[in-house]
Image (cartoon, rainbow, N blue to C red; front, side, top):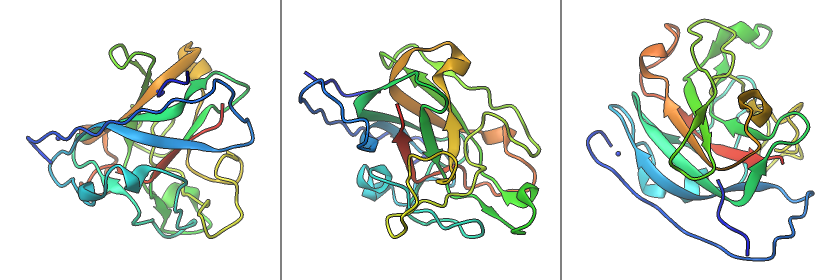
Length: 212
């Protein structure tokens, strides 16, 4: 059987689902979020919360270099979301999964002009013990934070959402954490670590794509 992989301020929401099928996974089929385990919005968050889990399922709806997508849910200041998938994320060659937010460039020719709303990304095999990619940068480039690479992949464009060289989004490699596999991804708004350039609405999640 295949296993499912992987609060508005003061309020919690829980979304769960499960699926079962053969262990065989077609490596040519893209895999995205299939359920939201939990969502906790901080102050300023909750935009499109009523559309969960659908708004974060499926491929990203990128706006290109200079426009942010509105097909997102906003975490708010310090908010958090925990995601699950229909496959297990495994450590393969290079990037294992991509996180898509809605950053954009103020100047197309200057990547450092990005309007970034950063998020800290963690992974877990059991949903209890987490390994976290360090998100400590407060100036460009933002290292292992999510939320600072513009998104080019969109359902209306032939760009492959699982091609890290073309899709945009923020790349993550389990090998960087010494982790072999994960069933859950947690994204937490960077809160006080947010760069001075950018707003206070918090991390806006569009999608997550599993490459391995």
